Image 1 (cartoon, helix red, strand yellow):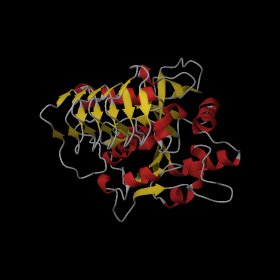
Image 2 (cartoon, one colour):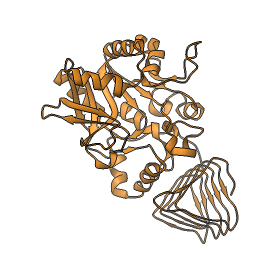
Image 3 (cartoon, one colour):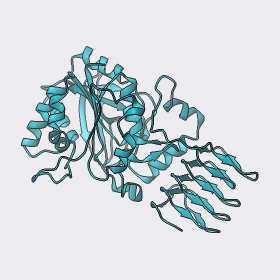
Image 4 (cartoon, one colour):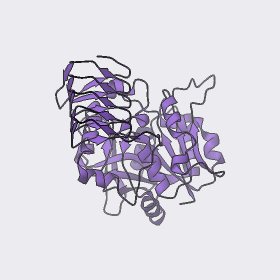
Length: 373
């Protein structure tokens, strides 16, 4: 794996995540109390032995840069290679808003050229997974493919008019590939992760951008599958995965983390997930506090009732407050007498005394950052 580098594209922002991505990229979304979405991608690469990881950013990248820092938490702060944060490359032609992943790669040609690894793993940031990427690279090398795509057969990964789907033959070759169908009919969902030779990717990107193309799935992979001149293989990922493309999917992932069996699958012993360390006091519970089936991060002060919820660092639940089926991000506050259910509170949000906020389980209420209710 020393001959493999990783590139993570964090530029895709999904309007269906509403207030959650108004000021941050999907990769910077806080999940499971103390992690962010990008932690899973970087950790998978580091656990597989990759030492050169580039993170391409677009707009709203300040919180992501602050989170990643020098890459110390992922052991990517050495003299050779390491973590490379790649903010938007500004020129007269490029104002910092990439039209797609092809534009982003083209703007970072210098990084791809300076890297010395032969193979490259390219990953988008809108799917949460935790994979043995070295197995995918081994499959790619042994099969002699030009490109290998990661896919899953999980039915909950399929979306109408969103995503890419494929048919995979018994020999692992991609026989058909469709992008954003009205109703997906193929059971294999592309997880936006692929392995390819670094020089081949550079060539494909240069040709595509020169012809005014922007989308990797629609403009590069699909034509390569259709013309049959290149061998496009697929490697099946059998572990748990979630697509972060809506408020409901974000809420579902966090609620799934309350299930010990699912949590053990994604946070497995041989694939630890690393994140930025924040030194805090342990969570403190008051005499009348009641906490049932919840994830509570360090720095929390709980004096009320919490059920089936996820509390990030520094959250305060006052006496008499009742929190049920909620996600409360960093430094959120719920004052005494308040009752909230099926809600997502972004950072530093406050629910004032005796307020009552109850949303439907299928469509949780989202409170934006720094909002007081």
